[in-house]
Image (cartoon, rainbow, N blue to C red; front, side):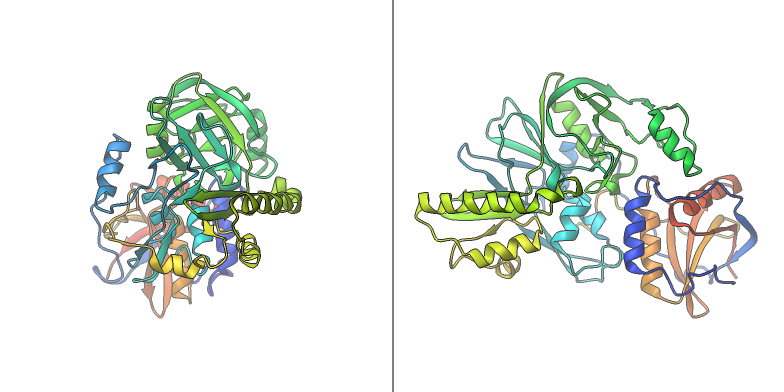
Length: 466
C-alpha cells in the first residue's frame, strides 16, 4: 500500500513526545478537512500481527475500595499514607518489570503516578516502547510541602496534591494532577471548595472558544456530561473564579501542564476526593521546587525543576535552600555532602535522596527498591480489539521503523477519548491501523482528530484480510 507522505521513515522521538503533550488537550494547529477515502485496507491473514484481546479490568465505580483491593497484593501504598506529627516524608521506592506493550503511562496510572513522576524518575526509558523485562522505578516516596497540613494542598512544582482529612490527623492522601500550561497557569494562594458538582456541564469560556476556533476546532457554548466533557464525572469549584478541581476524559494528561488553569485528576482519584471533601474545605496552592525532610537521623532532599513561570526564581530558591540546609545541619550537628546536593539539584528527578556524608547514593537506593509483581493488566490500560473483514478502519501511517510504529500506536491508544490502534508488519514495513469503528462516519471523525492532533492525513477504508 502506498506510504503516507513524508513519514515513511517515522517521526523523530522528540517530535512524538511533544505531539503527545499537545494532543492531551488538542492544541496542535490544523483545519477541518475531508479525509481521503480508500475502498479497502488489505491486511495480513487473520491471526497475524494482531494483539489478542485482553480482559480489561471493570470500570472503577467504587474508587478507593477497588483500587485498594487491586494494590493489596503489591504490598505497597500508592495514594494513602500514614504520617506522624513530626514527620514530613511518606512512602518508599519500588520497582516493576515491564511486559511487552506496557507503557510508562499505564504503569504510572496504576500506581498513583503522573506522567511527570514516572518519566523523570526513569529518564533512560522510552515512555511508549518498553521492552519485556525493563525495570521501571516507581517513585512512591514523597516529601510533604512545607505548609499547614489542613484540607487540600497542591504543589504545582511537582504536580501533586495532598489531602489531609480532618478526622484522620495521622493520614495523608496524595494524587498526581495535571495543571495549567504556560499562559494559563494555575494560580497560587489560599482558597476553598465553594461547591461540588456531580456530572457537571462544561460552560466553555469565550477565550477557549476563540482559541479552538482559530485552530479549526470550534467548540459549542456548553458541553453536557458524557465522554466528550473534559471535566469528567466530578468537579470541585474553587473560590478562585473559573478554577476547578475536576476529573478528565484525557487521563493520560495527568502529570502534565496541559489545562487552561484547572486542576485535573485521574477519574478514579477525583471520585475518592469528591466523596471525602466538603464545601468549605480549605485549598492551598504553592510552588515548592525543593523540599527537605528528616527521617530519624537521615536528611532527605527532593528536587524538581521549577515550572516555566517560576524559572527565573530557580537560583534564588536554590540559594535559600542551601542556607536552610546549613542551618539545619548546624542545629543537628550533621555534615551535609554538598557535592551530592549539587547532583540532586542538577538531576531534579523528584526522588527524595539522603544528603548527609556517607549516606546512600541514588543507584544504591534504586537497586534496593522492592520488586512488585506485575498485575497482568494495569488499571485503565487500553485494550485493542481485533479487526475483522469489512470493519471500518483507518490507515494512519506507514513506517520503515518498528519502534516508531509501536510508539505512534501506543499514543493513539492513550488519547482522550482513546483511538484503538495497533502496528502491523506488511511487506517489510510497519503500518499503524486504527479501528474498528462502527461506521464510515465515526471513522472519518476520528481521522479528523488524527489530522488535528498529529498533522497526519489518515485514510479511511474497510478491512480485507486475504
